[in-house]
Length: 129
Image (cartoon, rainbow, N blue to C red):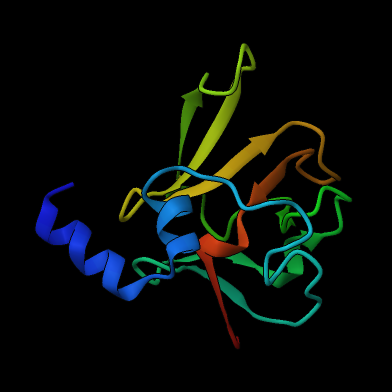
């Protein structure tokens, strides 16, 4: 990322949003705006506004982060191998449009997909459908 683009993002995002989306940080569990939200809407990327997840696929995973069993469109996200956390192998989830870090996906979710997209609230913006 170029310094000019980084400066624009720092001015537009909160420090927490910047840390999560750009530096691939993680917000503490049970602290984000959407971890316990039950409101209807579409969750967009906070950086570029791309629609990522629908509230109809949101579920309570008990982890303290917003969890979804599928994205709106598989093409709307990108998955990358992540080995940055000790010796753990995880799959990072990014916004396909802007590359913003969103969270991780795990294979312990509910039917029908069996997936749990564990996403940082700081990387999302909920809008009405």
